[in-house]
Length: 389
Ligand SMILES: *[C@@H]1O[C@H](CO)[C@@H](O)[C@H](O)[C@H]1NC(C)=O
Ligand SMILES: *[C@@H]1O[C@H](CO)[C@@H](O)[C@H](O)[C@H]1NC(C)=O
Ligand SMILES: *[C@@H]1O[C@H](CO)[C@@H](O)[C@H](O)[C@H]1NC(C)=O
Ligand SMILES: *[C@@H]1O[C@H](CO)[C@@H](O)[C@H](O)[C@H]1NC(C)=O
Ligand SMILES: *[C@@H]1O[C@H](CO)[C@@H](O)[C@H](O)[C@H]1NC(C)=O
Image (cartoon, rainbow, N blue to C red; front, top):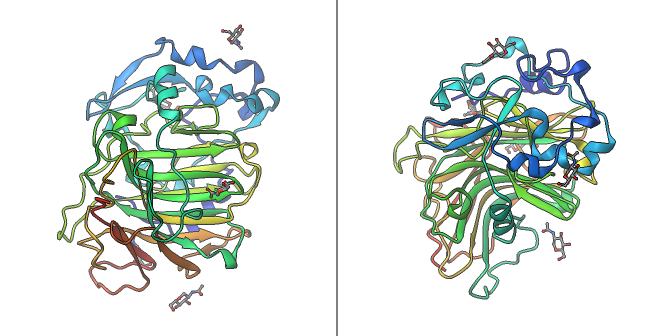
């Protein structure tokens, strides 16, 4: 568990051009050439190596350039400057290598990345279901229409103090809410760029993953497109041959236990080319090219729980309990940080407000100071609930 994200390291990440991601693909001068772009249909053909995680999930090792994101029209017009890089060679951590997640102990071969195999039918089925979103358009205690319920219990940046952000991070507890097929429950960070956004964190989504396990996810909305993970051409471009997006996290926290399971997520803008990078456990996992988004800064950020249900009643959020304002008993997101337009870190993030749309099902509490000595933290958000509304 690497939860260290100090400012020195963050600066190194953002300036981290010197050390590029050496053991990934071999790209001439790190420029990707337009001819390499392939069709989505090519991606569907089972041509690549199949490998398994220790949990038994299968992933396809896809050539770096055959990722769906290379099918996007913008990728055909541009020569991309991919300076793939890690934070700093001097800042290596034991978690830098994700080989332990795989049956083969390594992951995919060099030059390829693991992708969850998804058929076009599956993709179309998922695209009309459970579109994640921000809480800003929801109102307090709104009357739900029975189906298509969407609920939030979040802490979010205040609109009247609108800023331009270049990044945000969180440490999130891993929980296992009870979720039925046709429902989702996530603990996530939502970063809004104009009308576009990126969500990162964990989700239980039986329709997407065919089980009720807690799994990592990213969700991208850019223009008219939106999708999970690498499922469409505006999705994330993975750079790790050993990190399976969508794999099982945990084991889930045991309520009342002082030792829990936590993971660190970050979304950071590259200082030079403006690409947005996903960090997991302090390691760069992949990126979204800057030109995907109309706006080059994030304007709003929120952290917390989001649930969706196609029917009544709604599912659990977090650990299924209303928050008690205690780190051992609640689903939490803590040590949240933001980066301003000058890439300066804010480790307090005092400019937030809480929002939950229906207190009968879910709640959220903002705590700021290290009240519990065994659990040092700055900004901590307690949230969750039984749902059932
Ligand atoms: C991948 O490349 C790295 C660095 O070039 C090398 O150390 C490693 O052995 C390679 N792995 C495989 C599986 O070829
Ligand atoms: C993409 O697919 C279409 C139809 O399957 C094909 O005609 C075209 O040549 C493909 N393009 C590339 C770059 O592979
Ligand atoms: C809020 O609703 C408006 C109009 O329906 C839409 O254009 C906008 O994208 C929504 N914003 C968010 C953050 O969902
Ligand atoms: C945020 O609030 C804390 C507690 O009141 C305070 O110590 C800190 O200086 C504030 N930080 C900023 C950046 O305003
Ligand atoms: C959270 O922040 C506190 C106070 O800055 C620090 O002592 C602690 O190590 C951090 N924990 C994690 C998991 O990042």
